[in-house]
Image (cartoon, rainbow, N blue to C red; front, side, top):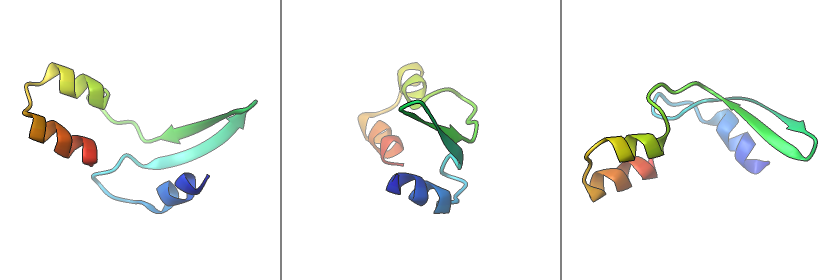
Length: 60
């Protein structure tokens, strides 16, 4: 749950924002800002990127 506290404080145009969270049974659900363009996996597989570029995107 420490990660949720960190996400609440992190506000940057480069980071998908945390909106809310809730427990459903024993599962923790996170509500995050919508990010157009698909998942990181989609971008990596659909775009011809160098290994260095993929590593830089993944770190962000």
